[in-house]
Image 1 (tube, rainbow, N blue to C red):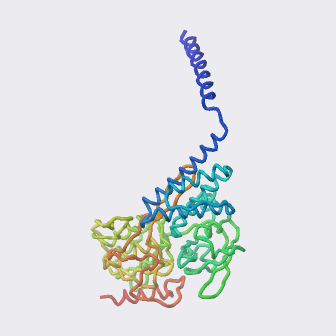
Image 2: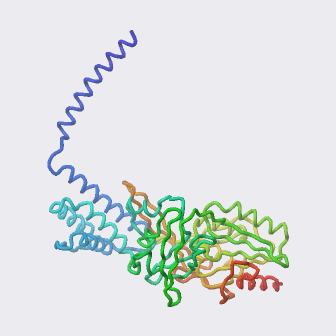
Image 3: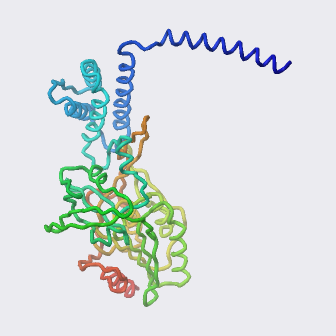
Length: 427
């Protein structure tokens, strides 16, 4: 009886469902232009969303006029032979976009995408970019191999911030400060940071030709894509009981390894510690602060500033310090999170900086996920050193400069030797 009753209920529900479905089909049957109009509204929704994110979240004030005119420039790239009106307000952009979509419905998607990209480009910020799903796939392709190089943008060109130590890029001869001219046969001098990055892709065993300018000389290197099994922490005990710890990158997973290395230095009661951040392109910002707190017992580690707001202090309350003097090694390949750590220790009087001026990346990006798989990488914050110095595009200047070329052997490296001599003579 229960089974029969269940069948009867299902039968009644099925009839009702068929009727409801029929009515929905009648009410919402496709009409000429309906689907196209929905797509246009969806595309324009993306434009408004990105516009709002930039206006509210970008770390510097941005005028509406700047973003709107940037969007118009992008639309003109799609329809170069069409007269596209100019304007300064979001309402002007909306009117122009829907007018063009009405005349050129097949171009609605391309108009929106180009408007969005050019809107972000109008910021003239190499670290802010709109990544379509296709571009994301290229940049984030998980082939299990890479060459291990970090790129940055300075003075209107793409530079190698640093090849990660022991990576294929490093072994091929690429160096910090190399300005990229070509990737394979493609001239990249007019390309932005992300366009250049997308050209450096391949599978295990593939070669990529990278032509750079190094102090006026054009040089070509061919690193081979390989699995990147990079050891992020290296440490050793040098002569005269001076400790040495190298951090190759902040990948969000090194804190425990660093603590272990630091603990060994304390157990050995080293008379000084060399903390090597050369060619460290950065990475996890919070991890750098956690490490800084191991040396700074209290006070400001770094200042973080958002648009229109007073700088906010990131403070240490660790009550920890290191029982011996510290030297931090930096060079032109030290950037972002490594500069945060170096500045935290130096401005708090917990370390002396030795080496060369760092790269100078003092801004922080936030990734906003957009519907459909696209992302907006937007610069939302800048950081200031504990002494409130802005080092973006400037870098940190060490107290002791080292001019000689580095060496892979710490015992023969002029940077390490300079730091070792300083610590040995410290009183």
